[in-house]
Length: 418
Length: 164
Image 1: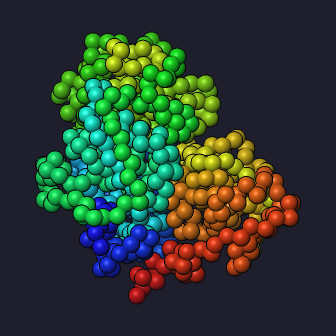
Image 2: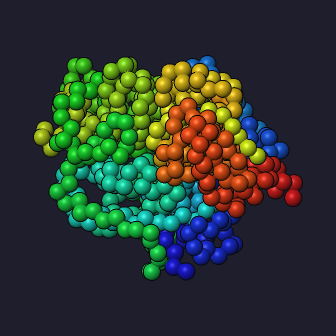
Image 3: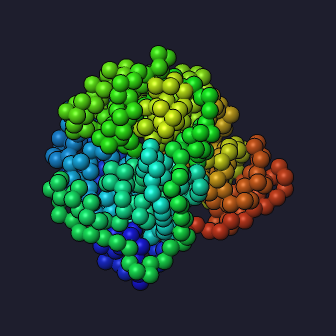
Protein backbone atom coordinates (compact mmCIF):
# COMPACT_ATOMS: atom_id res chain seq x y z
CA UNK A 1 0.00 0.00 0.00
CA UNK A 2 1.24 3.49 -0.85
CA UNK A 3 1.55 5.44 2.40
CA UNK A 4 0.87 9.06 3.32
CA UNK A 5 3.47 10.70 5.56
CA UNK A 6 1.77 9.73 8.82
CA UNK A 7 1.33 6.15 7.65
CA UNK A 8 5.02 6.00 6.69
CA UNK A 9 6.12 7.08 10.14
CA UNK A 10 3.72 4.71 11.89
CA UNK A 11 4.95 1.83 9.68
CA UNK A 12 8.55 2.46 10.81
CA UNK A 13 7.49 1.86 14.40
CA UNK A 14 5.29 -1.24 14.14
CA UNK A 15 5.59 -4.90 13.08
CA UNK A 16 2.03 -4.85 11.76
CA UNK A 17 1.48 -4.09 8.08
CA UNK A 18 -0.38 -0.81 7.66
CA UNK A 19 -3.01 -1.38 5.01
CA UNK A 20 -5.77 1.15 5.65
CA UNK A 21 -6.98 4.09 7.67
CA UNK A 22 -8.95 3.03 10.73
CA UNK A 23 -6.62 0.13 11.53
CA UNK A 24 -5.37 -0.09 15.14
CA UNK A 25 -1.59 -0.48 15.42
CA UNK A 26 0.80 -0.93 18.33
CA UNK A 27 3.84 1.32 17.90
CA UNK A 28 7.01 1.90 19.83
CA UNK A 29 7.58 5.54 20.75
CA UNK A 30 10.73 7.62 20.33
CA UNK A 31 9.96 10.02 23.17
CA UNK A 32 7.28 10.50 25.83
CA UNK A 33 6.71 14.02 27.15
CA UNK A 34 4.81 15.67 29.98
CA UNK A 35 4.78 19.12 31.56
CA UNK A 36 4.17 20.66 34.99
CA UNK A 37 0.37 20.39 34.60
CA UNK A 38 0.17 16.91 33.09
CA UNK A 39 3.20 15.13 34.60
CA UNK A 40 1.75 15.00 38.16
CA UNK A 41 -1.26 13.04 36.85
CA UNK A 42 0.99 10.88 34.65
CA UNK A 43 3.12 9.99 37.65
CA UNK A 44 0.00 9.12 39.65
CA UNK A 45 -1.14 6.78 36.82
CA UNK A 46 2.40 5.38 36.38
CA UNK A 47 2.35 4.31 40.04
CA UNK A 48 -1.19 2.93 39.75
CA UNK A 49 -0.04 0.77 36.83
CA UNK A 50 2.50 -0.79 39.16
CA UNK A 51 5.34 0.52 37.00
CA UNK A 52 8.63 1.02 38.79
CA UNK A 53 10.99 2.08 35.99
CA UNK A 54 10.52 4.22 32.88
CA UNK A 55 11.22 2.35 29.62
CA UNK A 56 14.27 4.50 28.86
CA UNK A 57 15.52 7.33 31.07
CA UNK A 58 16.87 9.14 27.99
CA UNK A 59 13.56 9.04 26.14
CA UNK A 60 11.25 10.63 28.66
CA UNK A 61 11.13 14.45 28.77
CA UNK A 62 9.62 16.38 31.67
CA UNK A 63 9.41 20.11 30.97
CA UNK A 64 8.10 22.42 33.71
CA UNK A 65 6.94 25.20 31.42
CA UNK A 66 3.29 26.12 31.96
CA UNK A 67 3.24 27.87 35.32
CA UNK A 68 6.99 28.48 35.36
CA UNK A 69 8.53 30.14 37.31
CA UNK A 70 6.20 28.53 39.84
CA UNK A 71 3.29 30.95 40.17
CA UNK A 72 1.93 29.91 43.54
CA UNK A 73 2.28 27.37 46.33
CA UNK A 74 0.07 24.78 44.62
CA UNK A 75 2.00 24.86 41.34
CA UNK A 76 5.28 24.74 43.27
CA UNK A 77 4.07 21.58 45.03
CA UNK A 78 3.19 20.02 41.67
CA UNK A 79 6.66 20.74 40.28
CA UNK A 80 8.32 19.48 43.46
CA UNK A 81 6.63 16.10 42.97
CA UNK A 82 7.79 15.89 39.35
CA UNK A 83 11.34 16.88 40.33
CA UNK A 84 11.43 14.08 42.90
CA UNK A 85 10.12 11.58 40.33
CA UNK A 86 12.74 12.73 37.80
CA UNK A 87 15.49 12.24 40.40
CA UNK A 88 14.18 8.82 41.41
CA UNK A 89 14.02 7.67 37.77
CA UNK A 90 17.27 9.43 36.84
CA UNK A 91 15.46 11.15 33.95
CA UNK A 92 18.03 12.80 31.66
CA UNK A 93 15.68 15.38 30.17
CA UNK A 94 14.10 17.09 33.16
CA UNK A 95 13.88 20.86 32.71
CA UNK A 96 13.07 23.50 35.30
CA UNK A 97 14.69 26.89 35.77
CA UNK A 98 17.45 28.34 33.62
CA UNK A 99 17.56 25.50 31.09
CA UNK A 100 13.79 25.31 30.73
CA UNK A 101 11.71 26.68 27.90
CA UNK A 102 8.32 26.19 26.32
CA UNK A 103 8.40 22.44 25.60
CA UNK A 104 7.57 22.52 21.89
CA UNK A 105 10.24 25.13 21.22
CA UNK A 106 12.76 23.50 23.56
CA UNK A 107 12.70 19.86 22.39
CA UNK A 108 13.37 20.61 18.69
CA UNK A 109 16.12 23.05 19.72
CA UNK A 110 17.79 20.31 21.79
CA UNK A 111 17.55 17.79 18.94
CA UNK A 112 15.32 15.53 21.03
CA UNK A 113 12.69 15.23 18.29
CA UNK A 114 13.05 14.89 14.54
CA UNK A 115 12.06 13.24 11.27
CA UNK A 116 10.46 9.81 11.47
CA UNK A 117 10.11 9.90 15.26
CA UNK A 118 6.92 9.04 17.11
CA UNK A 119 6.48 11.50 19.96
CA UNK A 120 3.63 11.27 22.44
CA UNK A 121 3.15 14.21 24.75
CA UNK A 122 0.68 15.01 27.47
CA UNK A 123 0.12 18.35 25.81
CA UNK A 124 -2.12 18.93 22.83
CA UNK A 125 0.47 21.03 20.97
CA UNK A 126 2.85 18.08 20.78
CA UNK A 127 1.78 18.04 17.12
CA UNK A 128 4.34 20.86 16.60
CA UNK A 129 7.06 18.31 15.73
CA UNK A 130 5.13 17.40 12.58
CA UNK A 131 6.97 20.44 11.20
CA UNK A 132 10.10 18.26 11.32
CA UNK A 133 8.38 15.21 9.85
CA UNK A 134 7.70 13.44 13.14
CA UNK A 135 4.40 11.78 13.95
CA UNK A 136 3.77 13.71 17.14
CA UNK A 137 0.48 13.84 18.92
CA UNK A 138 -1.09 14.93 22.16
CA UNK A 139 -2.40 12.32 24.57
CA UNK A 140 -3.66 12.47 28.12
CA UNK A 141 -1.50 11.92 31.17
CA UNK A 142 -2.46 8.26 31.64
CA UNK A 143 -1.75 7.41 28.00
CA UNK A 144 1.65 9.07 28.37
CA UNK A 145 2.21 7.19 31.65
CA UNK A 146 1.55 3.96 29.72
CA UNK A 147 4.10 5.00 27.08
CA UNK A 148 6.59 5.94 29.82
CA UNK A 149 6.22 2.46 31.29
CA UNK A 150 6.04 0.37 28.10
CA UNK A 151 7.82 2.44 25.47
CA UNK A 152 4.84 1.79 23.22
CA UNK A 153 1.22 2.72 22.69
CA UNK A 154 -1.68 2.13 20.30
CA UNK A 155 -2.91 4.36 17.50
CA UNK A 156 -5.75 4.28 15.05
CA UNK A 157 -4.25 4.94 11.62
CA UNK A 158 -5.82 8.25 10.61
CA UNK A 159 -7.06 9.20 7.16
CA UNK A 160 -5.11 12.15 5.73
CA UNK A 161 -6.23 15.51 4.42
CA UNK A 162 -3.65 17.03 2.09
CA UNK A 163 -3.28 20.80 2.25
CA UNK A 164 -1.57 22.44 -0.71
CA UNK A 165 -0.43 26.06 -0.65
CA UNK A 166 0.30 27.46 -4.11
CA UNK A 167 1.51 30.89 -5.17
CA UNK A 168 3.91 33.26 -3.42
CA UNK A 169 3.54 34.70 0.07
CA UNK A 170 3.12 38.50 0.04
CA UNK A 171 5.09 40.72 2.45
CA UNK A 172 3.84 40.60 6.07
CA UNK A 173 2.08 37.29 5.45
CA UNK A 174 3.60 34.10 6.84
CA UNK A 175 3.20 30.71 8.45
CA UNK A 176 0.68 31.83 11.09
CA UNK A 177 -1.56 33.31 8.43
CA UNK A 178 -1.40 30.06 6.43
CA UNK A 179 -2.59 27.93 9.32
CA UNK A 180 -5.26 30.43 10.42
CA UNK A 181 -6.53 30.54 6.84
CA UNK A 182 -6.84 26.73 6.82
CA UNK A 183 -8.65 26.59 10.18
CA UNK A 184 -11.01 29.31 8.99
CA UNK A 185 -11.72 27.23 5.92
CA UNK A 186 -12.21 23.73 7.40
CA UNK A 187 -13.27 24.69 10.94
CA UNK A 188 -12.19 23.58 14.42
CA UNK A 189 -13.51 20.07 13.80
CA UNK A 190 -12.49 19.96 10.12
CA UNK A 191 -9.69 17.46 10.70
CA UNK A 192 -11.25 15.60 13.63
CA UNK A 193 -9.58 12.15 14.04
CA UNK A 194 -7.52 12.93 10.91
CA UNK A 195 -3.97 13.79 9.89
CA UNK A 196 -3.07 16.92 7.96
CA UNK A 197 -0.25 16.77 5.44
CA UNK A 198 1.17 19.99 4.01
CA UNK A 199 2.58 20.41 0.53
CA UNK A 200 3.15 22.83 -2.33
CA UNK A 201 5.69 25.46 -3.34
CA UNK A 202 4.88 27.73 -0.40
CA UNK A 203 5.61 24.91 2.03
CA UNK A 204 8.87 24.11 0.24
CA UNK A 205 9.92 27.75 0.58
CA UNK A 206 9.05 27.98 4.30
CA UNK A 207 11.77 27.68 6.91
CA UNK A 208 11.63 24.95 9.55
CA UNK A 209 10.35 27.34 12.25
CA UNK A 210 7.43 28.36 10.04
CA UNK A 211 6.59 24.72 9.43
CA UNK A 212 6.53 24.05 13.17
CA UNK A 213 4.20 27.04 13.66
CA UNK A 214 1.76 25.52 11.17
CA UNK A 215 2.01 21.95 12.54
CA UNK A 216 1.49 23.38 16.05
CA UNK A 217 -2.05 24.45 15.25
CA UNK A 218 -3.16 21.22 13.52
CA UNK A 219 -4.94 20.46 16.79
CA UNK A 220 -6.96 23.67 16.42
CA UNK A 221 -8.57 22.06 13.37
CA UNK A 222 -9.20 18.95 15.48
CA UNK A 223 -6.29 17.13 13.79
CA UNK A 224 -4.34 14.25 15.23
CA UNK A 225 -1.16 15.58 13.66
CA UNK A 226 0.12 17.88 10.91
CA UNK A 227 3.05 16.57 8.94
CA UNK A 228 5.56 18.14 6.57
CA UNK A 229 7.81 16.29 4.15
CA UNK A 230 11.42 16.03 5.28
CA UNK A 231 13.66 17.99 2.90
CA UNK A 232 17.20 19.37 2.89
CA UNK A 233 16.15 22.23 5.21
CA UNK A 234 14.83 19.81 7.81
CA UNK A 235 17.95 17.67 7.60
CA UNK A 236 20.19 20.74 7.98
CA UNK A 237 18.16 21.93 11.01
CA UNK A 238 18.38 18.59 12.85
CA UNK A 239 22.02 18.01 11.84
CA UNK A 240 22.97 21.26 13.60
CA UNK A 241 21.43 19.69 16.69
CA UNK A 242 23.44 16.51 16.46
CA UNK A 243 20.99 14.27 14.62
CA UNK A 244 21.42 12.30 11.42
CA UNK A 245 18.09 12.07 9.61
CA UNK A 246 16.86 10.99 6.22
CA UNK A 247 14.67 12.65 3.59
CA UNK A 248 11.04 11.56 3.60
CA UNK A 249 8.16 12.22 1.23
CA UNK A 250 4.74 10.59 0.93
CA UNK A 251 4.56 7.60 -1.41
CA UNK A 252 3.50 8.08 -4.99
CA UNK A 253 -0.18 7.07 -5.19
CA UNK A 254 -0.91 7.51 -1.47
CA UNK A 255 -4.63 7.91 -0.79
CA UNK A 256 -5.93 11.19 0.63
CA UNK A 257 -9.41 11.66 2.00
CA UNK A 258 -9.51 15.12 0.45
CA UNK A 259 -7.20 17.78 -0.88
CA UNK A 260 -7.60 21.43 0.17
CA UNK A 261 -5.80 23.92 -2.06
CA UNK A 262 -5.05 27.59 -1.52
CA UNK A 263 -3.49 30.22 -3.74
CA UNK A 264 -1.80 32.53 -1.25
CA UNK A 265 -0.69 35.23 -3.68
CA UNK A 266 -2.49 38.40 -2.64
CA UNK A 267 -3.55 36.95 0.71
CA UNK A 268 -3.90 39.34 3.68
CA UNK A 269 -2.65 38.78 7.23
CA UNK A 270 -5.28 36.68 9.03
CA UNK A 271 -6.89 37.19 12.45
CA UNK A 272 -8.84 34.60 14.48
CA UNK A 273 -11.57 36.51 16.32
CA UNK A 274 -13.18 35.51 19.65
CA UNK A 275 -14.02 32.88 20.75
CA UNK A 276 -12.91 30.14 18.36
CA UNK A 277 -9.79 29.71 16.21
CA UNK A 278 -12.08 29.19 13.18
CA UNK A 279 -13.51 32.73 13.33
CA UNK A 280 -10.89 33.90 10.88
CA UNK A 281 -10.99 37.20 8.97
CA UNK A 282 -8.46 39.17 6.94
CA UNK A 283 -6.96 41.96 9.06
CA UNK A 284 -8.66 44.69 7.02
CA UNK A 285 -12.05 43.35 8.14
CA UNK A 286 -11.21 43.67 11.84
CA UNK A 287 -11.68 47.34 12.59
CA UNK A 288 -11.87 49.51 15.71
CA UNK A 289 -10.82 46.80 18.15
CA UNK A 290 -8.95 48.55 20.96
CA UNK A 291 -6.52 46.24 22.76
CA UNK A 292 -5.29 46.25 26.36
CA UNK A 293 -2.68 43.55 25.97
CA UNK A 294 -0.42 42.14 23.28
CA UNK A 295 1.43 38.84 23.72
CA UNK A 296 4.26 37.70 21.49
CA UNK A 297 5.43 34.23 22.47
CA UNK A 298 4.19 30.63 23.06
CA UNK A 299 4.87 27.30 21.35
CA UNK A 300 3.22 28.72 18.23
CA UNK A 301 5.18 31.95 17.76
CA UNK A 302 7.88 32.35 20.41
CA UNK A 303 10.85 31.38 18.22
CA UNK A 304 13.68 33.60 17.02
CA UNK A 305 12.12 34.20 13.59
CA UNK A 306 8.94 35.39 15.34
CA UNK A 307 10.87 37.78 17.57
CA UNK A 308 12.74 39.15 14.55
CA UNK A 309 9.42 39.72 12.79
CA UNK A 310 7.95 41.59 15.78
CA UNK A 311 11.13 43.58 16.38
CA UNK A 312 11.29 44.72 12.77
CA UNK A 313 7.90 46.39 13.27
CA UNK A 314 8.64 47.76 16.74
CA UNK A 315 12.08 49.21 15.94
CA UNK A 316 12.06 52.96 16.46
CA UNK A 317 8.39 52.96 17.42
CA UNK A 318 6.51 53.06 20.74
CA UNK A 319 3.85 50.80 22.20
CA UNK A 320 0.61 52.73 22.80
CA UNK A 321 0.33 54.06 26.35
CA UNK A 322 -2.67 51.93 27.33
CA UNK A 323 -1.22 48.64 26.07
CA UNK A 324 0.74 45.98 27.97
CA UNK A 325 2.96 44.45 25.30
CA UNK A 326 4.46 41.23 26.65
CA UNK A 327 7.25 39.43 24.82
CA UNK A 328 8.15 35.93 26.01
CA UNK A 329 11.03 34.32 24.08
CA UNK A 330 10.15 30.62 24.16
CA UNK A 331 13.48 29.20 25.34
CA UNK A 332 16.63 30.48 27.08
CA UNK A 333 18.48 29.81 23.80
CA UNK A 334 16.06 32.05 21.90
CA UNK A 335 16.29 34.69 24.68
CA UNK A 336 20.09 34.76 24.39
CA UNK A 337 20.00 34.93 20.60
CA UNK A 338 17.49 37.81 20.78
CA UNK A 339 19.79 39.58 23.20
CA UNK A 340 22.79 39.15 20.88
CA UNK A 341 20.84 40.47 17.91
CA UNK A 342 19.68 43.54 19.83
CA UNK A 343 16.03 42.49 19.66
CA UNK A 344 15.58 42.65 23.43
CA UNK A 345 16.80 46.26 23.40
CA UNK A 346 14.39 47.04 20.56
CA UNK A 347 11.50 45.58 22.59
CA UNK A 348 12.53 47.49 25.73
CA UNK A 349 12.98 50.76 23.83
CA UNK A 350 9.50 50.34 22.37
CA UNK A 351 8.05 49.89 25.85
CA UNK A 352 7.47 46.13 25.87
CA UNK A 353 7.69 43.90 28.93
CA UNK A 354 10.20 41.15 28.19
CA UNK A 355 9.56 38.10 30.35
CA UNK A 356 10.97 34.63 30.91
CA UNK A 357 10.42 31.56 28.75
CA UNK A 358 7.00 30.36 29.91
CA UNK A 359 3.59 29.36 28.55
CA UNK A 360 2.23 31.84 31.13
CA UNK A 361 -0.58 33.95 29.68
CA UNK A 362 -1.39 31.70 26.69
CA UNK A 363 -3.50 29.48 28.92
CA UNK A 364 -4.39 32.15 31.46
CA UNK A 365 -1.73 30.83 33.81
CA UNK A 366 0.11 33.96 34.87
CA UNK A 367 2.24 36.89 33.60
CA UNK A 368 -0.49 38.70 31.71
CA UNK A 369 -4.05 37.83 32.72
CA UNK A 370 -7.06 39.71 31.38
CA UNK A 371 -9.73 41.45 33.46
CA UNK A 372 -13.45 41.68 32.59
CA UNK A 373 -13.86 43.59 29.35
CA UNK A 374 -10.19 43.51 28.43
CA UNK A 375 -9.03 42.56 24.94
CA UNK A 376 -5.77 40.95 23.87
CA UNK A 377 -4.17 40.18 20.56
CA UNK A 378 -1.72 37.31 20.89
CA UNK A 379 0.52 35.14 18.75
CA UNK A 380 -0.70 32.16 20.76
CA UNK A 381 -2.97 29.35 19.55
CA UNK A 382 -6.34 29.46 21.33
CA UNK A 383 -8.93 32.16 21.83
CA UNK A 384 -11.57 30.17 23.70
CA UNK A 385 -13.72 32.20 26.05
CA UNK A 386 -11.77 32.85 29.24
CA UNK A 387 -8.58 31.28 27.88
CA UNK A 388 -6.37 34.21 28.97
CA UNK A 389 -8.30 35.22 32.08
CA UNK A 390 -11.79 36.53 32.75
CA UNK A 391 -14.75 34.88 31.01
CA UNK A 392 -15.67 38.43 29.97
CA UNK A 393 -12.36 39.07 28.19
CA UNK A 394 -11.52 38.53 24.52
CA UNK A 395 -8.51 37.12 22.68
CA UNK A 396 -7.65 37.65 19.02
CA UNK A 397 -4.96 35.47 17.41
CA UNK A 398 -2.47 36.71 14.85
CA UNK A 399 1.07 36.58 13.52
CA UNK A 400 3.91 38.39 15.33
CA UNK A 401 3.96 41.31 12.88
CA UNK A 402 0.22 41.96 13.25
CA UNK A 403 0.54 41.74 17.05
CA UNK A 404 3.46 44.19 17.00
CA UNK A 405 1.62 46.63 14.71
CA UNK A 406 -1.40 46.43 17.02
CA UNK A 407 0.76 47.18 20.07
CA UNK A 408 1.87 50.42 18.43
CA UNK A 409 -1.57 51.43 17.18
CA UNK A 410 -3.33 50.44 20.43
CA UNK A 411 -5.91 48.66 18.33
CA UNK A 412 -5.81 45.76 15.90
CA UNK A 413 -3.74 47.06 13.02
CA UNK A 414 -2.47 46.05 9.61
CA UNK A 415 1.34 46.00 9.45
CA UNK A 416 1.14 46.78 5.74
CA UNK A 417 -0.26 50.21 6.60
CA UNK A 418 2.62 51.28 8.86
CA UNK B 1 -25.05 -1.39 32.21
CA UNK B 2 -27.56 1.44 32.31
CA UNK B 3 -27.71 5.08 33.31
CA UNK B 4 -30.55 7.37 34.21
CA UNK B 5 -30.60 11.06 35.01
CA UNK B 6 -31.31 14.63 34.04
CA UNK B 7 -29.68 15.89 30.85
CA UNK B 8 -27.54 19.01 31.13
CA UNK B 9 -27.18 20.28 27.61
CA UNK B 10 -24.28 22.44 26.46
CA UNK B 11 -23.35 23.75 23.01
CA UNK B 12 -20.92 22.92 20.20
CA UNK B 13 -17.12 22.98 20.58
CA UNK B 14 -17.11 22.88 24.37
CA UNK B 15 -13.38 23.19 25.00
CA UNK B 16 -11.31 21.89 27.86
CA UNK B 17 -10.79 25.46 29.13
CA UNK B 18 -14.58 25.63 29.53
CA UNK B 19 -14.71 22.24 31.23
CA UNK B 20 -11.91 23.05 33.67
CA UNK B 21 -10.05 26.38 33.37
CA UNK B 22 -6.24 26.31 33.73
CA UNK B 23 -6.32 28.12 37.07
CA UNK B 24 -7.80 24.96 38.64
CA UNK B 25 -5.08 22.68 37.24
CA UNK B 26 -2.92 22.94 40.35
CA UNK B 27 -4.44 19.75 41.75
CA UNK B 28 -5.09 16.20 40.55
CA UNK B 29 -7.84 15.56 43.12
CA UNK B 30 -11.09 14.28 41.58
CA UNK B 31 -13.47 15.98 44.03
CA UNK B 32 -11.68 19.36 43.86
CA UNK B 33 -11.68 19.25 40.05
CA UNK B 34 -15.33 18.15 40.11
CA UNK B 35 -16.30 21.14 42.25
CA UNK B 36 -15.12 23.41 39.41
CA UNK B 37 -16.52 21.43 36.50
CA UNK B 38 -17.66 23.72 33.63
CA UNK B 39 -16.53 26.78 35.58
CA UNK B 40 -15.13 28.12 32.28
CA UNK B 41 -18.61 27.98 30.75
CA UNK B 42 -20.58 29.56 33.54
CA UNK B 43 -19.68 30.36 37.16
CA UNK B 44 -21.36 27.87 39.51
CA UNK B 45 -22.52 25.63 36.63
CA UNK B 46 -21.90 22.48 38.64
CA UNK B 47 -24.53 23.37 41.26
CA UNK B 48 -27.28 22.15 38.90
CA UNK B 49 -25.88 18.61 38.80
CA UNK B 50 -27.17 15.67 40.88
CA UNK B 51 -25.08 12.51 41.20
CA UNK B 52 -25.74 10.33 38.14
CA UNK B 53 -26.88 13.13 35.82
CA UNK B 54 -25.88 13.09 32.17
CA UNK B 55 -23.94 15.69 30.20
CA UNK B 56 -25.19 16.31 26.68
CA UNK B 57 -22.88 18.12 24.28
CA UNK B 58 -22.85 19.25 20.66
CA UNK B 59 -20.19 18.89 18.02
CA UNK B 60 -16.50 18.37 18.89
CA UNK B 61 -17.06 18.15 22.66
CA UNK B 62 -13.80 18.35 24.64
CA UNK B 63 -11.71 20.17 22.03
CA UNK B 64 -8.55 21.97 23.02
CA UNK B 65 -5.91 20.84 25.46
CA UNK B 66 -4.90 17.30 26.42
CA UNK B 67 -5.67 17.88 30.11
CA UNK B 68 -6.99 14.66 31.59
CA UNK B 69 -8.32 16.89 34.35
CA UNK B 70 -11.29 17.53 32.00
CA UNK B 71 -12.85 14.03 32.09
CA UNK B 72 -11.79 13.74 35.74
CA UNK B 73 -13.67 16.93 36.63
CA UNK B 74 -16.81 15.65 34.88
CA UNK B 75 -16.58 12.38 36.82
CA UNK B 76 -15.84 14.36 39.98
CA UNK B 77 -19.02 16.36 39.44
CA UNK B 78 -20.97 13.08 39.59
CA UNK B 79 -21.55 12.72 35.84
CA UNK B 80 -20.72 9.18 34.61
CA UNK B 81 -21.55 9.61 30.91
CA UNK B 82 -21.44 12.25 28.19
CA UNK B 83 -23.67 12.00 25.11
CA UNK B 84 -22.63 14.29 22.24
CA UNK B 85 -22.83 14.86 18.52
CA UNK B 86 -19.07 14.16 18.33
CA UNK B 87 -15.96 14.31 20.52
CA UNK B 88 -12.46 15.73 20.13
CA UNK B 89 -9.98 12.87 19.86
CA UNK B 90 -7.65 13.45 22.82
CA UNK B 91 -10.67 13.93 25.08
CA UNK B 92 -12.17 10.70 23.68
CA UNK B 93 -9.09 8.66 24.54
CA UNK B 94 -8.69 10.30 27.93
CA UNK B 95 -12.29 9.64 28.90
CA UNK B 96 -12.06 5.92 28.21
CA UNK B 97 -8.78 5.80 30.12
CA UNK B 98 -10.45 7.50 33.09
CA UNK B 99 -13.67 5.47 32.98
CA UNK B 100 -15.96 8.22 31.68
CA UNK B 101 -18.33 6.71 29.12
CA UNK B 102 -18.81 8.69 25.90
CA UNK B 103 -21.63 8.10 23.43
CA UNK B 104 -21.47 9.70 19.99
CA UNK B 105 -24.90 10.09 18.33
CA UNK B 106 -24.44 12.71 15.60
CA UNK B 107 -27.49 14.76 14.56
CA UNK B 108 -29.79 12.80 16.90
CA UNK B 109 -28.43 15.07 19.60
CA UNK B 110 -31.23 17.48 18.62
CA UNK B 111 -33.69 15.00 20.19
CA UNK B 112 -32.41 15.81 23.67
CA UNK B 113 -33.10 19.17 25.35
CA UNK B 114 -31.72 20.64 28.54
CA UNK B 115 -33.34 19.12 31.64
CA UNK B 116 -34.92 16.18 29.81
CA UNK B 117 -35.00 12.97 31.83
CA UNK B 118 -33.08 10.33 29.91
CA UNK B 119 -32.01 6.75 30.39
CA UNK B 120 -29.32 4.84 28.54
CA UNK B 121 -29.14 1.08 27.96
CA UNK B 122 -25.50 0.59 27.01
CA UNK B 123 -25.75 -3.07 25.94
CA UNK B 124 -28.67 -2.40 23.60
CA UNK B 125 -27.31 0.95 22.44
CA UNK B 126 -30.54 2.78 23.17
CA UNK B 127 -31.10 6.21 24.72
CA UNK B 128 -34.67 6.82 25.91
CA UNK B 129 -35.85 10.38 26.33
CA UNK B 130 -38.54 9.95 28.97
CA UNK B 131 -39.59 13.59 28.78
CA UNK B 132 -40.47 13.43 25.10
CA UNK B 133 -41.04 9.68 24.78
CA UNK B 134 -38.50 9.30 21.96
CA UNK B 135 -35.84 6.64 21.54
CA UNK B 136 -32.43 7.11 20.01
CA UNK B 137 -30.38 4.11 18.90
CA UNK B 138 -26.66 4.42 18.41
CA UNK B 139 -24.01 2.09 16.95
CA UNK B 140 -22.09 -0.03 19.46
CA UNK B 141 -18.61 1.02 20.54
CA UNK B 142 -15.76 0.18 18.17
CA UNK B 143 -14.53 -3.36 18.97
CA UNK B 144 -11.09 -2.23 20.09
CA UNK B 145 -12.51 0.32 22.54
CA UNK B 146 -14.92 -2.27 23.93
CA UNK B 147 -12.15 -4.84 24.49
CA UNK B 148 -10.15 -2.11 26.13
CA UNK B 149 -13.03 -1.15 28.42
CA UNK B 150 -13.59 -4.85 29.26
CA UNK B 151 -10.05 -4.98 30.57
CA UNK B 152 -10.99 -2.08 32.87
CA UNK B 153 -9.25 0.72 30.97
CA UNK B 154 -5.64 1.64 30.42
CA UNK B 155 -4.22 1.25 33.92
CA UNK B 156 -5.08 -2.48 34.29
CA UNK B 157 -4.10 -3.00 30.64
CA UNK B 158 -0.59 -1.62 31.20
CA UNK B 159 -0.31 -3.47 34.53
CA UNK B 160 -1.09 -6.73 32.72
CA UNK B 161 1.51 -5.99 30.05
CA UNK B 162 4.17 -5.11 32.62
CA UNK B 163 3.52 -8.39 34.45
CA UNK B 164 3.52 -10.47 31.26
